[in-house]
Image (cartoon, rainbow, N blue to C red; front, side):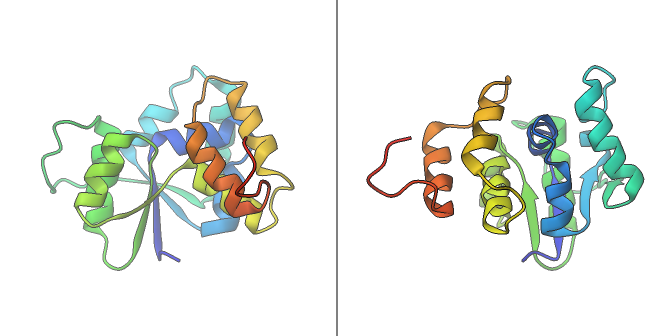
Length: 169
């Protein structure tokens, strides 16, 4: 497991929608949140989700961290993704970056970072027994405005043993 876990906005938003923020603590302990990402997720517009994120910050395991002042120029990414990647690059040792957006994931991979997304966190929560069903969580996300590619969901459900290789989700 990575010694340091950093989250972009999308995984926090998705997990907050299904009341899964605490899974991050159970899975990873402390999670770092770049200040720019904190500004993106704590806007005052999504009261229920933001309350869950704020509670994690107040509990001390979701830690808002200043954005690094140095790092590569990442003009094709939004500010939060860029801040997360720069923060990950600034830390010694193994780092896991939680990020969903395809472009951000590609850049992070190119820079040698290990990445995982919301779907992987849900799958890991299922495998660690934190939730009884990954499929139920994916269904709840699907009923919101949060989207995960069907192929990604199928892969996670296979890894969790909720469908076999011959099943279609």
